[in-house]
Image 1 (cartoon, rainbow, N blue to C red):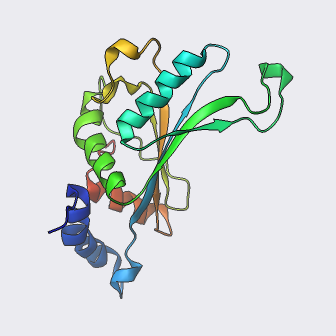
Image 2 (image 1 turned 180 degrees about the vertical axis):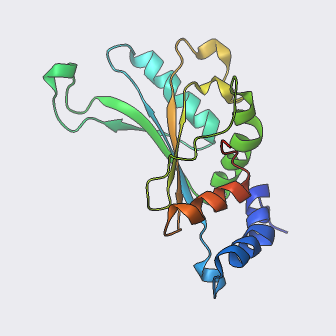
Length: 182
């Protein structure tokens, strides 16, 4: 028997049927699904040195369980004292089982640890079925050791779905358990 994360099992057993009933799909292939989750963390190069940048990369790798990469600047920008090829952000793209495992940890462990949490903003959809979630501090993830963090860095989490509109994507994420504000 192969391993199947909880959200993936939930999607196959219950969510597909719920979406077919709600949106009257003719075929199972029309049902929207979560295709990938992208984590992006901007790093301020004037504040961070090489060691702190490496710690930020290791933190994202620990959170996701997959190696993160630096995104480099494409050109010089004198206003920001930025040189071409300097790391300006860290990103990682999650797919398949790793994506579902991260989604499970985010919904059940990390988001309830946010101070005064009332739910995620339901207006952060882009019009094409993708959802962006901003996290202000990475301390909510249990995989990070508090000893290595000197400053709190936020991150952007993008949920990319195969749905055609925001209504379908919102209902899909709601069925996965993402708590939207009322």
